[in-house]
Each structure stands twice: as C-alpha cells, then as structure tokens.
Amino acid sequence: MKPLVFHPIYSQLNLPVRHRFPIQKYQGIYDALLKKGVSSAAFSQPKAVTEQQLAEVFCPQYVRALCHGQLDEKAMRRIGFPWSSQLIQRSLTAVGGTCQTAHLAAEHGIALNLTGGYHHGFRDFGSGFCLFNDLYFAAQQMLKRIAVDRVMVIDCDVHQGDGTAKLAENDARIFTLSVHCERNFPHRKQQSDVDIGLEKGTTDAEYLETLEQALILAFRQCAPDFVIYDAGVDVHEDDDLGLLNVSTQGVYERDKLVLDWCQREGIPVACVIGGGYQRDIGALVNVHLQLFRAAGVVA
Ligand SMILES: [Zn+2]
Image 1 (cartoon, protein in one colour):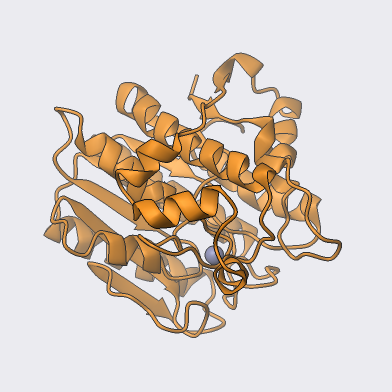
Image 2 (cartoon, helix red, strand yellow):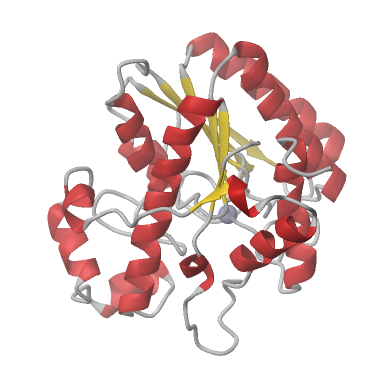
C-alpha cells in the first residue's frame, strides 16, 4: 500500500466568488481515490508545521507578518489570496503534509501528498498562490536525516519553480530541475540547476522527449539520495493558466517516466500534486489522478 497524505483542511478555504483557484480539487482527488477502491487506511493526516519551524527556514519577519495578517495589501495581492486565519492554518497543514510525505517516502520508497508544490514561495515573500515553499522546507527537513545528503527537486509544473531555485541557489545539497513553459508566469525567471523552458503549444512527444533529456542531464550532474517531485498538471492542454498542449495520457507518461526513473535508481520519491487550474473540477481531478495511476495507487 503506497502511503498517501491528506487533510480535509486542504480544501477548506472560503474564497471570493469567481476566484480562479480551484480549492475543491484536493477533496475531489481524495473522494475519487476512495471511489476507485483505495483504502482509507492508506491515508495519514498531517499536522500543521509551526510558525517557529517555518521561521528557522524562511525569513522570520515574513513568517510572523503573514501568519498574523500583518503583511501589506500589495504583498497579499502578490500571493493571490485574501488573508484569513483559515488560509494560514491550511497552508501550515499543507507544508506539514509535504514533510510527512517526505518522511513516509524515505521509509516506503514513495509517498504522495494530495496537495503541495508551493514553488513560488520565496524566503521573504509569497507569490502565485504560494505562501510557504513546502518543497524547499521538506528538502531541508530531509537533509537532517543521516541517510540523506543530496535532494533533487524535480519540478514539472508548467510554471518555473522560481522560489525553490532562489532558495536553494547557494545550497549545494539541493539540486533543482525545472521543466516549464518559457513564456508563462513567472516572467522574471530564477536560475535552477537545470532549467528547460519549453515553447508554447508543446505537445506530448516533444514534451516527454525533452523531459527525458532533462533527467539524463540532471542525474549526470547530481546523484541525489532523495527526490521531491512536483507533478503539476497545468501542462495539460485544457488548463486555464498553462500554455502547453500535453494530453491526459501525456501527463500519465510523464509521471511514469519520473517515478520509474527514481525506482530504477533506487531513490525514494515524495510526490506533490502541484498546480492545475481547469475550472471543471471533475476534469481537473481526472488529470491529477494520472500521478496516482503512474504510482500504482489506482489502476
Ligand atoms: Zn503552476
């Protein structure tokens, strides 16, 4: 049984009508997995990380101001959510979820979080629906383990993993690979260890071929003993914010490529679902489910 991490709070956030963030998708994935026969025993519920833990990794003033609703309006606009205590509790639990997923992956070879991928979170500001960078935070937690000296973050969300790249730029123990759409948010890119910026409209064959080359390149430069995989599905052809043309089958093959790669190399992998912004929640959930198919959680 592959360990899965979920908390109902992932979808518990009241947003203004017509806000574009599909907050219901997390609960939707959970419900769909149960419906497909996944045992509820496969799931564990994460604990929220504390403000103190975050302040050890990110800028303490930023962490404090955001947690207590004291960030100015401009900084909140950059994040893209109105401030609420619900938003903070949800975000702290999401970061806790990615950490728990990483620890479970270290024990079981793979584990999957039903949220995560807040890769536009920087040390002292948030951006693009990301408050705290769970990928970087979890990488730091894993590096405290005796068996982990190098972590690779493989980020296949359609948007560049700019926050992760910047946070990890001076840390040789964290290797960042981002495969994204070049002409898409964020417009000012940061430098990952390996960046692949794809053209708008890229389709399956080219997408998968490029990803494979990127993996070859990354693993030639870094021999990680732990991988964190951001399986964002905003690469999908029907996504509202992505500009690529990857099909549902293409998403499945991408996830299979990454997960099989890690398995072949014998490297534990913690997966997060990442971005995905179709307004049709049912259709969006189906694309996110490809990760769980590729991991062998569901058929
Ligand atoms: Zn994205």
